[in-house]
Length: 500
Picture 1 (cartoon, one colour):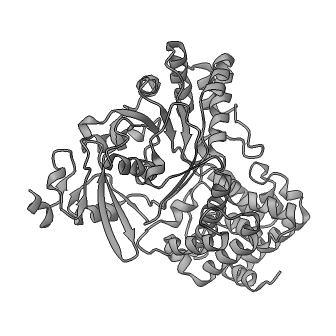
Picture 2: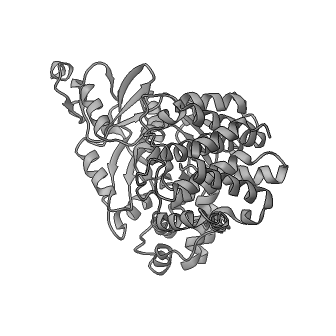
Picture 3: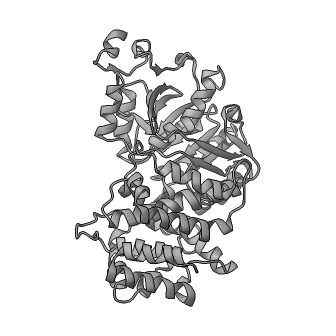
């Protein structure tokens, strides 16, 4: 059977076939039948498997954390497809690391189950109520936390939140399910669990606390107080570039001798920084390279503003110029110089060094990571949900620049490029398909801003009062008019040559 996998016929991924996979593919060395659950993870996509699950796998390879296995979960109907794929291969995943000049693969197995997807989340609630579960973690995207963009407070008026407040026993959202499970645990006396966000949000733990406690308060103030006082919500910074899986990735894993219906490709870099705040214990992640600290802020500020903010700089310009991937964007001389100058002159002044990394060196590191041609990370994927990503990743640098008197010219250009992209056409005339939960509203504002740029900045849910800041609004208006008249290349070229 092993010969079969090594001579062109991929071996179906399963527990029974692990010993028959090609010798070049690393496999779990631990007994997966001995694993017991300790974590429920909601939102089980590629990033989770390449990141959090991989760190846990490394511990298990050392014979540790065998009582911290992962049970996957989801609250969207589309998650059922992922569950079916993984269930057919015993919840194993092939991770493919793509270095610029080398490919390697390993199969990881810390996940042992996936809760069935149900409209009322009954079985998810029961799973989280199990006393064995000590951590509930989430990757539900930056825009999934019901945040009012302008105030950063809790959006209590969303229809799903109103439903969960009225029907706490049959919630629609992940947060409603967490609250229902914690209510059962409080009544049973089995204690709280840690709620851990793994999404790209600065202060993600504090944001998760706000969402969970605020939603609970709408239906049961006493329960909300109990959660607030007993559960912990550690802040964390997560980092690994993980593209979506498509036909090319499925072909790649088969070429390596593995028949995996849901493989994951990733870059040869990972980082995880976690606040040490776990009310019911945690795996010894620090033994496998995770930074456990009481202060995550400086790490996450550097990553979110340079990498995630840089992603928006590249992807929006690349979309307008019909560049398909982030690697193609950074290979473009104008876009690369635009990113580097904006980062150096307008983002770095608000960052401080963290252990082992100066901000200037971090920009170089991110540039090199973006340039990896093996990571087929599409501009469309990275540009998706700009309505959450620009307020979270770019606008904070603008606000700091205006407050501290540092340049914001390049950041104004970043926002003008996004506004031009949201008008819905590339510079070659081709259509940009809807790429944001609020695409229709953004497209209308972007098209109106062509003749009156103020319309774009008056979207206070994204920009606060920036429309009333004469300096920023004036520079935004200049760039947007220039882009519409002469194109994004001309605007980037002028900025790069601008010494002010």
